[in-house]
Length: 417
Image (cartoon, rainbow, N blue to C red; front, side):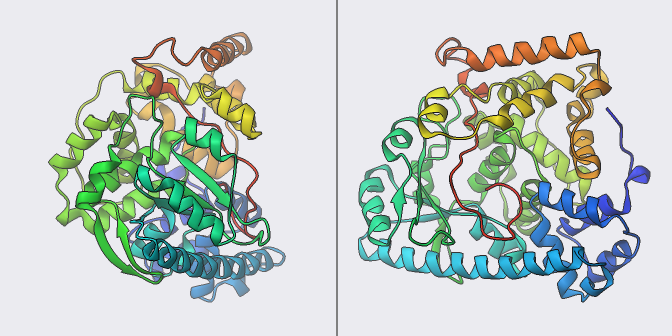
């Protein structure tokens, strides 16, 4: 696999990395933009890394779109318009649903996308997200579902998700452009070793005034650990998810209790995920440095998790979710070299991320011979088909839910939810 040094970055890759930085400036964007010429690669990479709206909004704000040839400038204008409309829709629907929950006496916490966007972006629509994530207490799942149905939402295989997952997806069949809702009562699988004990979040939740009104947010330390886990949990790592963590860390660095953060990451079993995402943040951008706790065997744990995307086959098969991408992730795992040099560079995760930004897919033949590559693919597939209880002590280290399907994305949206 190709190695990347800063001097080898293309202007397009350099621009995307800089746009995702917590410390970008108008001058820095402009100077990097002037060096770009491969608009096809730039827009494709931005879409893969869920930063197409970030690109469109930033260039629009600096009045740089006219300097891009059509049809690329037209595409970015469409993306910007769709992002503004989608952001307005999410804000309005969040406000409406929060009001409905409050009138029913249901405490509701806002997770991930929208709350992150408003806190770490000057223009919240820069940060694309497809849905609205609410966390309620387990006893409020049924009444909260009733509220959503009264508002015109319908559950997506509610019984399956209630028994096997930690949230129920809701969508609005009569208004396909309305943002879907994920109703959480937890953030990790119920029968795994990775546990966040979200019940304790309610005692320490913070209150914040956002555009949708006054909302509850997860405690800062717990949220940072959860976001780092979520960024890598599905085997897909993007600039958007790493940037979320980097921006939140830079914004709240002085107020955070880092001993508590490390303890919580260890307690939840997510320290490997935390280290990977935060080390990437430090390597890409000048965020304040932290001394990450040492790990053992974390490389194998992450590879196993990426390789075992189908250990929840009942959910996948019974809900009709698409399952092509777990095999793609297994392919990535198969081509990653495993020597000590790679362990020193996050088993090439940074190189892989930069490669995906620059060239798209990892070239399978670059790392090893075809027979060796196929052997590792087969080993990964066997792991995927193992019974869930075969190795209960490590099951949740390798458990990974397949990407859901069936939700409409806003026109012009970039990437997956």
